[in-house]
Length: 229
Image (cartoon, rainbow, N blue to C red; front, side):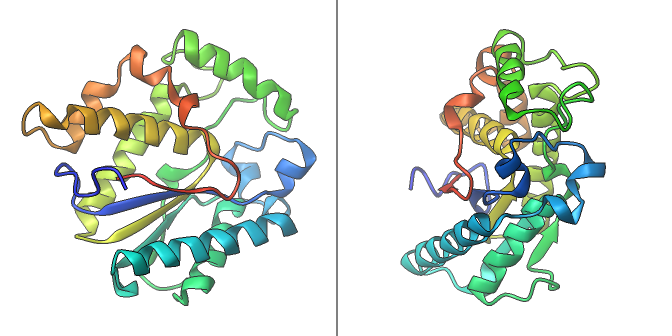
């Protein structure tokens, strides 16, 4: 793992994109909280299998790093597909899902693409990503800009850093938020050699167009697990 002892964070983090969901199978954009929490948009059978494999991979990495299960925390988006994924992983790790080790965080929710895109074809994602590349501060109509998402992800990271100490944290979220989180934390890590600034300062320094517009470089497949820091 790259720089796992990064001094600007007190925990170790992994990111996991939810397994293949029913919206993925149907080729639908489901990004509003109202739709996202509906049970009919949880994991497809293939996605459950992906979540199980991710859980087994995470468990192996914990064992290789000599991290005990009592130090594990699973923080997840409230959407049904991410909650379902987190539950499957918790089962693999034999962690009770209703315990303090598993925490739903609204700040980890899917990026809201706006009413123009909601329940439309996945093919329309490229329109938003093209917009992000040109201007990551520009919002799709009624939706969130790349910077809007990074702002709440920064809140999530600072909350986890404040609440947990020396833990192994699995962040279960969605494609856009997780590629943005990787992008911004990669930038923050590169800044870590230049002074003693904390996480909040490093993220703030990274919220510039030249960084924010590059999030697609960190895209994840469904059910893909990656170390963060």
